[in-house]
Image (tube, rainbow, N blue to C red; front, side, top):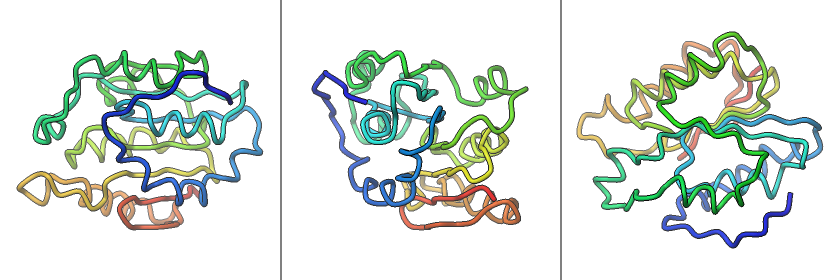
Length: 196
């Protein structure tokens, strides 16, 4: 998919993920009628990469975000003004992107509760509190097709003082509890799972 706008990003956190995403998601380029789900999209760097690298005009990506920023952005002094405007610019206002503005727990419960196995790829990079990471994983897992990929971001993230509040305890617990349904492809700064 070709996008016309030159993107404008204030952060480039996603760039170091590109080699692993290319390696583990590259096969999706050749599938038709793909659907992706991104929980937490910030300024849209990952969204745009998916669009330019893996998507065609027939594919869709659904994003969930409050577009208000979060506690980690405040702690790092990141300007979160006009996040939705920045996101829309960076994705070229594409009709292939379906935006759900609000809290992921509410949107996953209200918009997708009756659906199963509809997404080829799910990316969890929303609220980084462990409880919310777990909610996002549990609520989105039934939406992932068998053979699909789920990626947790920021496994090594330690911004909260209490270890239990950071993402990795939730990710470890999810991987343990769903071990019969997953193949762990990589565990580093991101955890990449395949649903089996």
